Image 1 (cartoon, one colour):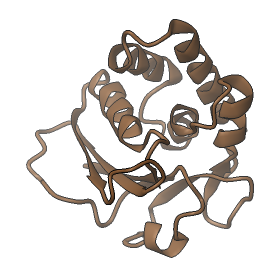
Image 2 (tube, helix red, strand yellow; image 1 turned 180 degrees about the vertical axis):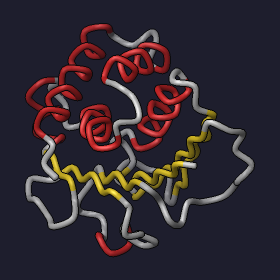
Image 3 (cartoon, helix red, strand yellow; image 1 turned 180 degrees about the horizontal axis):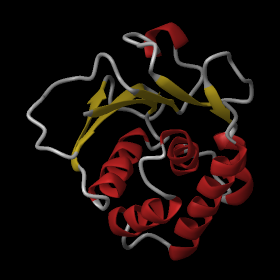
Length: 173
């Protein structure tokens, strides 16, 4: 089983990131499970989402304490808290301007701002996650975005996919 934990703030697309990962994995034959943990349900409050993927039925329920991947959408959240339960094999993908040892990093907020016109890093950061995890492709992400965000402005969706592709190309590990 592959377990993923996503950290960010309300309004950054933390929950939507989990949904998109689960959808893209589902399109590749995985059984999936995604859910979120909200504190104060308001814009800017810390939010954590969880994703489980497996080729077999997923019977496990509950939070993910020792993830295989940690995706950080907002570097202002307490880093030590986000890294709780880290294993030697855990891969960290961080949306940040700086590069920390043992983490993969990309400035997804800046890329999203330049391409999409809004500082919402979720889909952009997923481009970096795809490159690091190699679980599915950018094409699968595009299909997931088309399904999950159906009815949204087509131009904005295309720009988000462009931002994801840019993050895929620019992620540093």
